[in-house]
Image 1 (cartoon, rainbow, N blue to C red):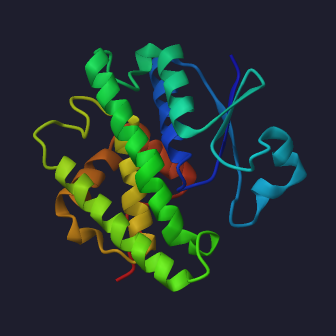
Image 2: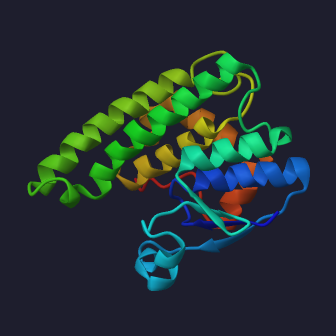
Image 3: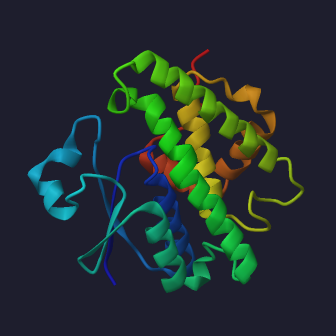
Length: 215
């Protein structure tokens, strides 16, 4: 099987990137990847639009067939490579992990989009950004509460894509000028997850660090 990921460092494509790393570690199934620099507009080139007409990352080619969207990609990898343990096998635990991931993908992430690209949503850019940032902070506080649980990971006893998305959010918070020390449980938890061998490997590959907050 040929798996090829199109990703941009530090974006939500980090989630399936780690999932592919888990697949490779557990099964030996290799994958290749191409970095798409969103800041340079590479997602808008005719070459990339021919691959993904929506001009977004992540995009995963599976034997040449396109699959997009974080939840779809990690769900596919979980079904195709169960040994990678991307999601729990217990039906309720898996559903809860998917529920948390969906909330992160369609609520927390989309709120931060309004922080990072407020001009897309309002002519009053400053007001739109300020409002979205306060809402985003409330979600960081909610994740901080999740990290206070006694379970090793957010969704229970094993690493799931929700934990990887949590890494992305705390990095984005620092970029937006939010001090992660305001969320001590979350900050400590993110450091633990970032130390996971596969997570650490993908972070090194993407050349990203956990600490993005400039004091």
